[in-house]
Image 1 (cartoon, helix red, strand yellow):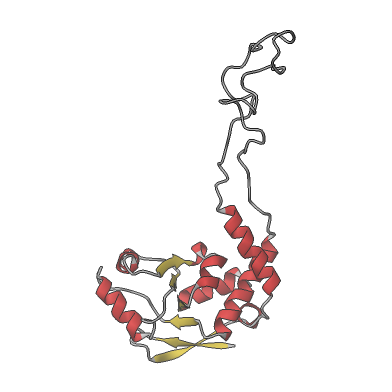
Image 2 (image 1 turned 135 degrees about the vertical axis):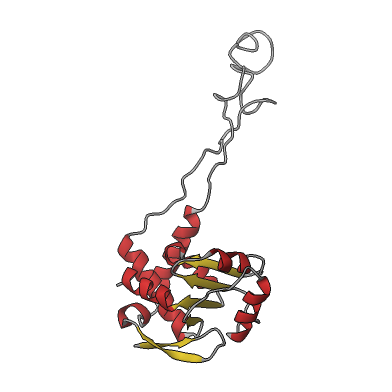
Length: 208
């Protein structure tokens, strides 16, 4: 299949041939959901921690003798029922990561790119070069492509240069990434994904 290419002014400037195996796959909702959940789970720190009765300082001596005081038996002042004692079911650091096979991840990315193309959310441009570091130039280029009203835009280039990154940094909802930095969460949540021709070729090689 072939994708239409637009230039910086938004006019058609040619076509690029891509593989149907990458950009014309049926959408596998269950697989995409599993990969997205696994990616979000991998970003969780899981660093919560509380002290149980063995972690709390003190409590080594028996508070009072076993019999004859009229009080309930007590073996440690750091029991969970005591003030200053440990937590009964103390939280521990957890690893929330989920295993996703490489073939599953690539299949999910192919399904995402294909769905973006079917819904008209994938746009291919010849270049994303910015002559100087100015947010206004980035806004003008997005306006020429008809993307001013889009809330979440992902700009994908094979190699992100300094001018492009700094010009788009202050725009809310606009993210810049290279092909290696793409993730399923940002692609699924994007209203528009703008890719250069070189980035499309690199994605085709990666997901072939």
